[in-house]
Every structure is written in structure tokens, then in C-alpha cells.
Image (cartoon, rainbow, N blue to C red; front, side, top):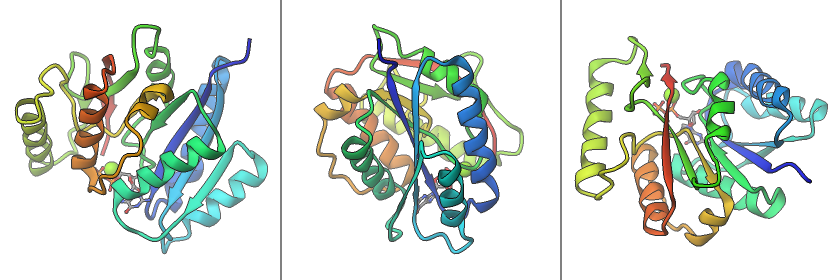
Length: 216
Ligand SMILES: Nc1nc2c(ncn2[C@@H]2O[C@H](COP(=O)(O)OP(=O)(O)O)[C@@H](O)[C@H]2O)c(=O)[nH]1
Ligand SMILES: [Mg+2]
């Protein structure tokens, strides 16, 4: 039987120092399990620090990594371009969102994928369930913003049952993402995550959260 095809969509802006070690670690840790047919799409918005050059160099050595370059129109726009491109060119069974700056640990990738079982359509890497952590470097204002965003999402957008509505570390079944296509909202960071989650929940996605360690 063919392995489930997974595509990581990783947005980058000025991540030249992070992207090579991040790609290497994600590929290594996921490959070790041999349970997924892995692909990575980096969505870079003409980062002035030359992130794209690093990604191109990596993809010459490992063609499972590819690059989508575009003009900078915010994080939400980068994700949507990435999702559409991945669906068209890679046609994965599962799509994963992950940051490039090591906020999301490559060592958490396997648990994220494993949690996407038969009863689950969307796995959220969550800072706000038991066992979830945020490192001490995350300043008070960032913590408050994150808490406030989650409060609004949970009680205003009626996503009560989800603890971390603004997480950018998720694995979603393509079949469910297809249900909510085409996504048209062009929103920034946190709000994009809430809008995407809201669409998926309204479409009937069965959600599960797993604890992660979030690093600044
Ligand atoms: N393609 C693209 N990536 C972005 C943009 N802004 C941020 N990113 C990337 O998105 C991820 C999360 O961004 P970051 O600034 O760390 O968000 P924060 O951790 O919530 O402050 C990182 O991998 C960034 O490099 C953007 O405008 N375009
Ligand atoms: Mg970050």
C-alpha cells in the first residue's frame, strides 16, 4: 500500500539562517519513521536575506523540497498560495503548516502526524493543552496578545472546544481542506489561523489538539 503523501507548507520571510537546518531536521525526523511520503513546499516572499537561494540549493540535493516565490502580501496570502500550489503540484493526502523559525520543533512533527488517526481530520500543535509549553523568552505582550486572540476566537467565533485557535502548527486532511475551497480570506497571521480553523470546524472537521513546546 502506498504511504500517505504529506506536504509541509512552510512560509518564510528572512529565514536564511534557519531554513537549511530546519529542512534537514524535519526531513530526517519524519523519514526515520518511514511512514509518510514526505514533501516540503517553502513559500518565500522575496526575502532580502536570500532565503530562496538556500531553498533552491537544498532542493537540488533533495527534490522533495520545492520553492514557491512571490511578492509579499502578508502571511495569510502566502499560506493560501502555498496551499493551492501544493494541491495542484503535489496532491498530498495531508497538509502540514509549520513556521521556519524553530518556534515549532521538528521533533514534534512525528507526533503531529501520528495524531491524525481515523477519527481525526485536523491536528493542532497546541500551547494551551496540558503538557503544552511556551518558552520564557516570549514577552508579556506576546503572551497577552496570544491569550486575547484565543479568548476572542473561542468565545466570539464560537470555537470553544479548541484551546489554541491561533497556532500555526497543524496537520489537516486534504479531503477536509478541499471542502472549504476556495479559501478567499487574505488575512494576517493570527487572524488567518482563526479563520482557517473556523472554516474547517464549520465544514465538520474533527479536531484534536496535542501539546507542543513553543519557542521564540
Ligand atoms: N512567505 C511569508 N512568510 C512570512 C511572512 N511573515 C512571516 N512569515 C513567516 O511565517 C512564519 C511565522 O512568522 P513569525 O514572524 O515568526 O510570526 P510570529 O512567530 O507569530 O511572530 C515564519 O516562518 C516567518 O518567516 C510573509 O509576509 N510572507
Ligand atoms: Mg515566530
